View 1 (cartoon, one colour):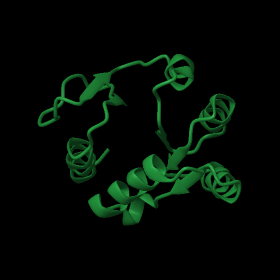
View 2 (view 1 turned 90 degrees about the horizontal axis):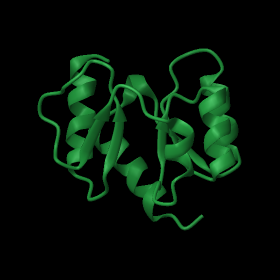
View 3 (view 1 turned 90 degrees about the vertical axis):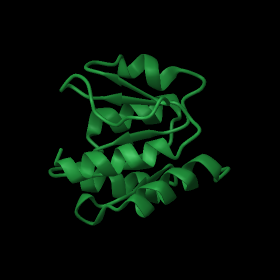
View 4 (view 1 turned 45 degrees about the vertical axis):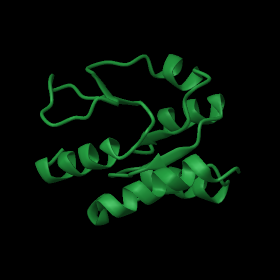
Length: 122
């Protein structure tokens, strides 16, 4: 992840009152807020199945999308390549996802998408 995008995520996550689990393989990270927990590996099925999980930010790959659907967890998708864009469009059409384009990602767009998913009752 380019450094400017990493900083964007750090800034947005710091604004949230919710706890954030972030899969990050590079070890420690500078500047993260106290509500963020990093993990090199996270048991995705267990995390998605937890009753307190409110949303899942994903690239929109098929398996991640299927797992979130199975557990009834809404998605914010940031597709990168391959089938991810199509998976996210389908998920949006079914009403359980929002897509944010990586190339056009800003703090405002990511924060708005997170707030929409957290506050929209559907």
